[in-house]
Amino acid sequence: MNTTDNRIVFENVSKFYGEVLGVNRVNLALDPGITSLVGPNGSGKTTLMNLMTGLIRPSRGSIRVLGMTVDDPEHLFRAVGYCTQFDSFPRGVTGYEFIYWPLRLHGLDHTRADQMTKEAIDRVGMMSAAGRKVAGYSKGMRQRIRLAQAISHHPTVVVLDEPLNGLDPMARAETIALFQALGQHGMHVIISSHILEEVDRISDRVVLMSNGYVVAEGQIHDVRREVKDHPMQILVRCSNPSKLASQVFALDHVVEAKINNDGQGLLVRTRDAEQFYLLLNRVVSQGVVDVEAVAPADDDVNSIYQYLIGSDGSNA
Amino acid sequence: MSAVANAQTWVKEQPWRMWTNQALTIARIDLRRGLFSRRAWWVYLLAFAPVALIGAHALVDSAQRTGGYLQEDTNVLAGIFQIYYMRLGIFFACMGIFTWLFRGEVAEKSLHYQFLVPVRREVLVIGKFLSGAFTSFVLFEIAVFSCFVLMYTHFGPLGSAFIFDGPGMRHLGLYLLVTALACVGYGAVFLALSLVFRNPIIPGLLVMAWEAINPIMPALLQKLSVAFYLRNLCPVQLPVEGLLALFTVVATPVPAVVAVVGLLCVTAAMIVFACMRIRKFEITYSTE
Image (cartoon, rainbow over all chains, first blue to last red):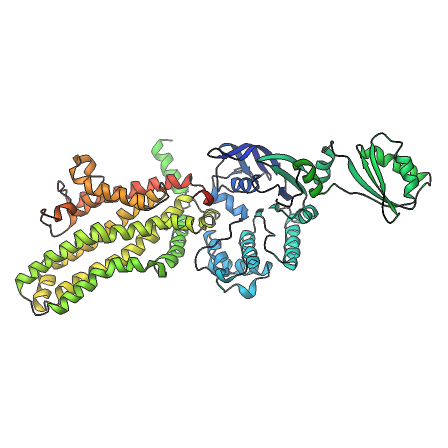
């Protein structure tokens, strides 16, 4: 095992279920931080997660997680926690037992396993329900107890398949804060989610998937810049948008400029954002307009997703 | 360094203690779901149905306590053991218990939890096998012991003399030994087959067919049967005639030690096969 390697690496990985394609020719190297897998149903997100945890084997290629092969669960799952999408549990188990027994399999004695179980349950706010059977939990509670199990042994890599499903807004906000905390501690947090706005807000990088292929990956802003065939949208909040509009129309790369309804801003669509920013600097320095704020309007996951996959992400 | 020395070093370096603890923990978790669950009612029924029959027989026929009846009851007990327990009761109980160890978790979509812990999959197989073996062993040992006690105690002093001064204790010991071997032997076979076939009925029918046709197979193939070894260990041989011939193994006798070692070898081979299969096992519930 190469313990110095702290990345998750897919090398030319393909997975076929008989004739059906799971994922094809995936090459990825994920650094620590929060990585979001985004794509419609059947795009290969869960397959990718199952591959990196050894639940399924690649038809071709190889996968290494922190330098470890996924064929070695004895070492792999000391460093990896996986919260799957399967909403099923061992029969008759309580929330406490669901976390306690796997910890015992880590070789922990009763006292330590008990302590870590309570710590994990507390972290997802489930202490009062820990003694109850999981079968009686609501969907959100089941989701949270699975999340607690995935993080209970303090893994370096947490893989979370649709972790926000079934959570109410409060629990969702708390869970997102938990992901951010995990990501800030140098952990790998791999998330698949169809709630693109939330993923967008917390991700360090995204992996966009479609029909088993990785169509784009990297930091969201970098990915957006790579999408050349869709002009970037930039919203400029300023004092005199019509004057600014007249200036930007002189530029070849500006496709469209639209004054906001409130008359206090201009939405510009440009094929060359760098050139536009240079112009804006010049205009501001000449005192033509007072700029209050400048922000890209479409370098979020949702827009990129729409441009690359041609869907609005609602069925992701 | 020689190959033997390398092997010795490898063996010494392995975390046997941790693997043992993990296997026992897995067995413990499974036992709570198996032996003590309401779903296991039919296994209790298979194990204890003859106990109820023999108990009723002991009550009804308590007046018939002569030596002739004792010999007859000894043959009845041998028949119940060889035809019912060995061929049906333990066979089907093991089929249910051991095939369900993995297939049950696949059906309930909970097997992935056992694949997501830092446990070698081979250790998982051993742990589950131990839980199945313990479940079947406890139930059938108690049942066979109860049958034996009920069969002879109603004879009073005659029965006591048969047990303590005659061949009774040897019979009991052999019945319990055969029961234990049948549990691990059939258990290992069904555990291995459950990792090949999705439907436990198919391996069950295959094994049953194999055991049925085994006596007419060549001597070497006969040794690949659980019943072949068990038959050789039974204390009372049943006559091979009439309907009994359908259920009775006609095999070249082998010494008891060979029978025990042979069966344990078959068991070990099946467990090794299961360990090899589990390494390639994938969680694809939707296609199961």
